[in-house]
Amino acid sequence: MPRSPQHPRGGRRVVVTGQGTINALGRSAPETRAAMREGRLGIGPLAFQDVDRLSIQIGGQIRGYDPEAHFSRQELTLFDPFTQFALLAAREAVAASGVTFADPGRAGVVLGTSGGGLQTQDENYRLVYQEAKNRVHPLVVPRLMNNAAASQISMDMKIEGPTYTVATACASSNHAMGQAFQLIRSGMADVVLTGGAEAMLCFGGIKAWEGLRVMSRDGCRPFSLNRNGMVQGEGAAVFVFEALEHALARGANIIAEVTGFAMTSDASDIVTPNREGAVRAMRGALADAGLAGEAVGYINAHGTGTTVNDKTECAAVREVFGAHADRLMISSTKSMHGHLIGGTGAVELIACLMALEEGVIAPTIGYELPDPDCDLDVVPNVAREARVDAVMTNAFAFGGLNAVLVLQAWR
Amino acid sequence: MSDAVRETVRDKVVAILAEQAALEPTAVSMEASLGDLGIDSLALVETIFSIEETFDIEVPFNANEPEKSDFDISTVASIVRAVETLVAART
Image (cartoon, rainbow over all chains, first blue to last red; front, side, top):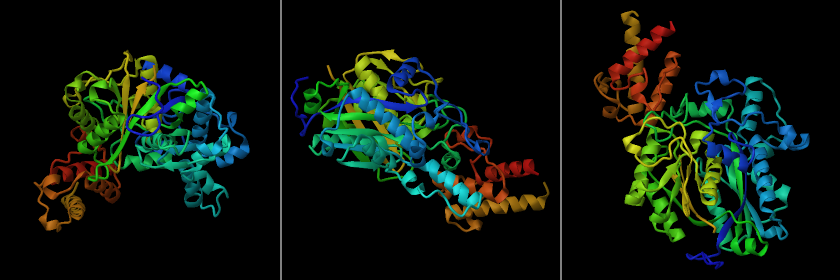
């Protein structure tokens, strides 16, 4: 690819120069990639207060996590788990990238989350309603607010430019990363830390989901005929998105280029996915990247493991890619790390970067039986080595909000 | 289960379905399917919630595999029978 600093569809080119994560598969991006390569299962029995009162008792929980190993007591007063996860991921990404924020007004933070400080809400509601306490900790509000993670990262890194949180349920991270792409592309910022975080694995978080009857009690098996619902996960992933010229000027290691983004709204149903909305988002992202569908070698699916999502998504992929749908690979890594809701697209971007950088396609594990409604190459159970030059990552949220990104290899 | 209890279960289930369908209970026939009543997926999860709250039971229903659930939702009559079974198991 020529080293022009201009995106062919206008604005500046944007590259990824750092990645960081903590999730059920690993405490870092390299650990997570290794787990994805091995097709390791991060989902297991949930452990938290009152879990015995839930009908859903499995999830992709981060095991053996000790907050005090990472943060001071004063910090922990202010950091809900979703903020902790976001900070750990951001610190890893920035260290790996080597980026500094010498011009802090030209740097930003755009994160996705759906529940924000949900555990803080859960714990404090328990105190006032169940235990009849008449006061809660004075810092509950700055701890639970949805923008707490983005703000704490900006304080931690002394980043003074555009900083905010995007909440679009399961598409939050993809919307956030798309926004970061646009901020840099349009010239509003040179470097943006972006991705998402979620820490919804607590009694109230799961109890609310149970009612929808879409969760599986026994496992996440996307695209498999015997799939029976989604399984939640937790954690964060944060990436350094950077203007190409900025990255080249400092001699940064470039992992991949972000080339296309589109977002659509189904405007039809608050929970049921809509094929047309997904089709429009995928087509829009390809058009933005200036790519033909045939160029895409891998799609990281939304692939929640619900009956309706997976068959709708596969039908949408067929409609967008035509005959090429039978040649491309599509997998759902939610089968390994669970569905991180507002943080999911971020953790899934790790798989996309692995595909582009290492030529390793993360599998859909738990795949047992073919479903004629999902008859695509879903990379069942075992990772695959394959050189891909362009990847797509899908997020189709409750509320009918869709966000799709296209990334390309940097060679 | 006595006939009186059975009648109560049926009437309460019909009332719940009628409310979700925005119909008079007399307009809910035992042979009707949820589709006939215009009860969509969101109304269905609300219906199940109402049934659980009304009868103090746990309804084993997963929207991803309705056919596999012990709770048969194919008609009003099948729902009434399923609730009767769960109520009987509770007592």
